[in-house]
Image (cartoon, rainbow, N blue to C red):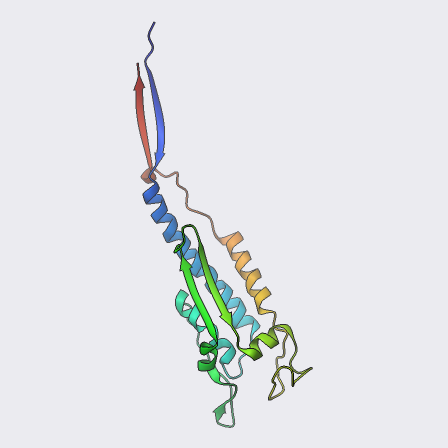
Length: 178
């Protein structure tokens, strides 16, 4: 007795799916960084000289976030160093798949008064915070927590990986035995 059997197997076009996945993850990375910047910069940190907001410009430029900074002038000149000082005291970058499977954005600053006001109210201890004028909107800002929450909410509720199970990415192969 002999039997003839036909098996069907499914193969995913991995190269095509990986390209689609990279494109999708890169877009989502930039969108999530934009959400983080919007919550962090526009909602949590007040503007005075523009230096604090200036620390976010490198990341904003990397993700295409239109960050316009207008600092408050006092007696005809900017106080606190302005936007340029903020840019000099910061790093911001995007890493989209440079290491396989890793997509991230990075923001760093050592701008003293921003770091101090992130955790403390400079009006309560002016000398420790290097305060040269009373703050109208003192810290603690808590922008790291605000940004983290906005980022996590976006990632959990607004992202979904593309399906590999589409006709364009699948090959059905028949195998005859016997």
